[in-house]
Length: 100
Image 1 (cartoon, helix red, strand yellow):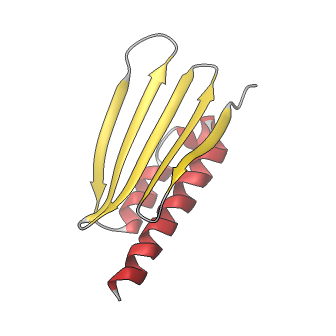
Image 2 (image 1 turned 30 degrees about the vertical axis):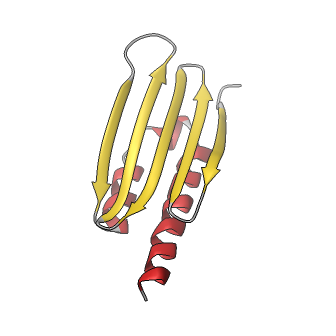
């Protein structure tokens, strides 16, 4: 299928794993709420070519949302993009609730 599939593999109060597969390969995200903000790993696994991985830590939700909205998955895997933002929002909220 042209859009591929998006899955929410693992969910906990402090971490999420999401992935999607399509014609060109697979993309995976790992999100974890940490003391300094939100830790994100983005791994792209093409059918051909080099695998790439990014690790980023965001201090606030606004910077994460901006980064997420600039990722090409927004167009290639729109369901994954929505799930990524939704799960990150839940992680920010869960941590904020635990801080109070």
